[in-house]
Length: 442
Image 1 (cartoon, rainbow, N blue to C red):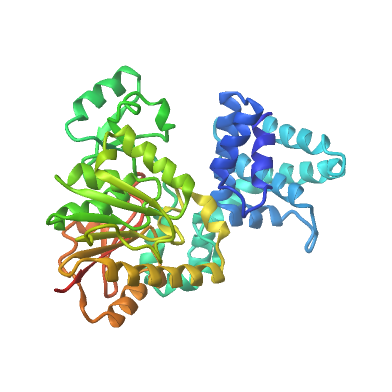
Image 2 (cartoon, rainbow, N blue to C red; image 1 turned 135 degrees about the vertical axis):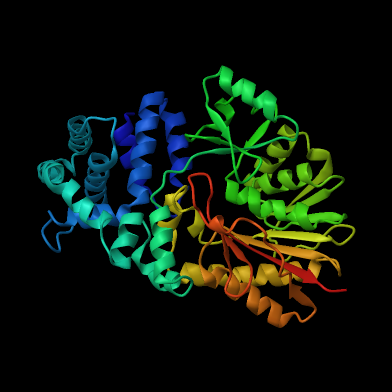
């Protein structure tokens, strides 16, 4: 299966199905795709997902108002529009011909090939100018469209940040996303030697102890991965989890929504003598966490339990430190994982906020008196952050927020309003995060 056809198949699949990256990986394995085709398909999927509304607005200039097109045809136009305007190392003519050939091979869609060809020809002629207008736009709405921020979310952004802050933030969302490697303790020189020998250039971060790459990678293909020398993890995630080390005073740590175990592993590596109990609702992620902790040689210090974190209770002693990396809109990571934003709507955002309040309320109840709860999201929206913390604190008078949470450089840190702090995505390795630390008084 060719890359263009694979991209169209992934992009027109059910939005409630697997994320685009997972769907593409499964498709590539099933069809036995070549590496070059996988790379092209991945690039096209990312380009469309990152700025979907921008491509819709540009392509819409050349479509008859109110014209109803089958989803596959409309997505063919968006793939062509985004590819023509952003792919720099692939022939525009080859891209258009590949899209038209894919349409012609489907009997019910073949009649739309001439329309798609006409629209993409106009994009070739005028698309760059239309894109420039959005790039240089002054309104927050047009800045959002150019930066790939769904327009319906603007009220939530406006309740969180000033217009000046939003202009800065939306501009930062136009940066590419690159991989950063959290290095196992004492293994930096060994890893650097392996990377250099394989032709992978890495540089030390000026924010964390991680290494920065100027590319995205498939971890298992990088030397040192199977030996447990590194974990791919954004610097924002590393900074958030490092707050455990800053305040940890001993005892068990509970990772309430542990995912695939990345933060759990960091805590075990950074907090000497610690043990971690991991809760995760997804059986698939539990298996991934088991594999991750085993790869890093940390399995003996961790207990993994599958179940809904709202209802689970801890085994044995109460945790002295609870980490809640709550499910959220992922708005701080939309540049890295753009497909997540198109699954959202107001109802979903409200349900996430309600879930976050339940989870945080449960976290402070299971925490040992005198212990800490670290609330984390990869969201930059106040309804998922300060508002959640405020409601839980009001309902639990035995709890108080720790005010001296952050001593990071102000260039990548913003104070919450009024609770917690934000990690600001100022570079290609630093995703946006929110953190608040709560003390459960004795």
